[in-house]
Image (cartoon, rainbow, N blue to C red):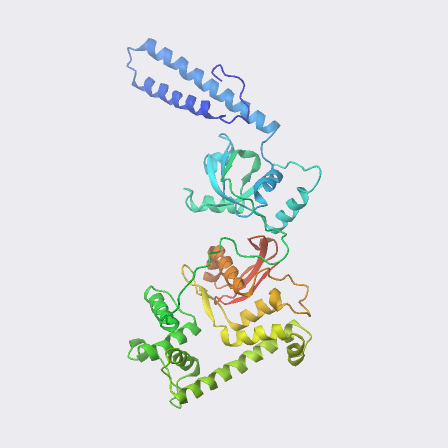
Length: 437
């Protein structure tokens, strides 16, 4: 091109001369448009330059396309081996200038390569062979939020992708390569920062009250459990609240409902502002709640194992102690409220189903002993669940807005830090199942 040697698709500055030649062509065409009718000789010279540039550009494009058909630069196997098998590597991909991908998405994009479960399994197997094939196949990407592409094109890249052979060059930051897929043993959530917090003089119940009121003020909603929490806290911290005047707080016998009163008593107990008879009342309500949760545990154990509750308690004392702690410690809560069609929450039944069947620390025998266990501690599984919900939020909102359950499993499962996860959310926003595959 313009007297230079035959270009190769591997040349680092392959398209630089072509870009310059295109700019020159535009410049010649602009000059031609400004010529007067008397400037015939100048017009003739400019037209010669235009035709010459057009021919050179077409010849260059044809040559590059011929080379790409003969031998493309990146296969799906090479991309997985170099980048895809590692965790969260952000890539800047530059497409060949004349490719279909460049025409659709622009010359370059940035994001993370995505793989379905069967695709990752197949590629893991292929890269371990002595002779690895080179396939010109589809690559899907989660595009970085700051990339200037329409939502439709981002969706196209995520669902359909582009042909690997359309890639000209790949750039990435030189960071340590971490691989979690297939890793055995317990894991930690990556990029976790532990922040020390001095809770002296901090009232968590007042903080919850403030958070719930702010959510309502911002147009959000509370699940039923959170609404009763708020009413209980208001009864203690702000008994003259207008909200309390609009709510039914008492039963037919003039007693506050237990599921409201318990939160009021918790706040009073924390602030050492509770009467002796109220302590007795608090213990009675807690005992009633405990008996209800024990029945839920018995029900889940019966579903999951062949053990009776008493036998289970004797044979699994450590596990049973964990369950005993959960009876008092677990609170229903919204795991995600911002940007959701409905609050996405879990109940004690959700907790038991997820932890009892799939948590390593609560690993049990029976019908589900072959199910895959979490590779995280109990305290981290809630965080993994929340991360999963955040990653799937657009799809979850779409299903729930149609009045349908949301399910994702099998080959469509969510990938995070080396594991694929199944998730089931009922149409009311309640999470009913979550586990690694």
